[in-house]
Length: 61
Image 1: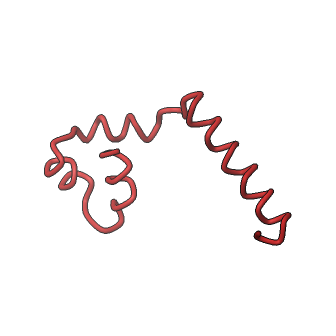
Image 2: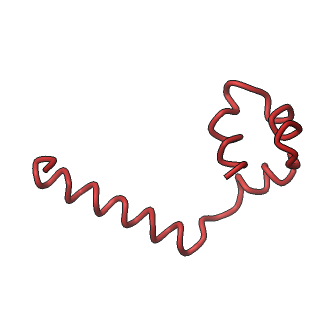
């Protein structure tokens, strides 16, 4: 969750500053960025896409 916050706000504040304030390592953040999605996250992403397609196909109802 912390790394996701840093990734979302890195265009606003420097990564090094946020990592220091949040007490996480910069190297850990950069390793997290390069890490592949886990099986559960990949399944969740596919599910979100299927739900979105169904929603749009039903005229957003």
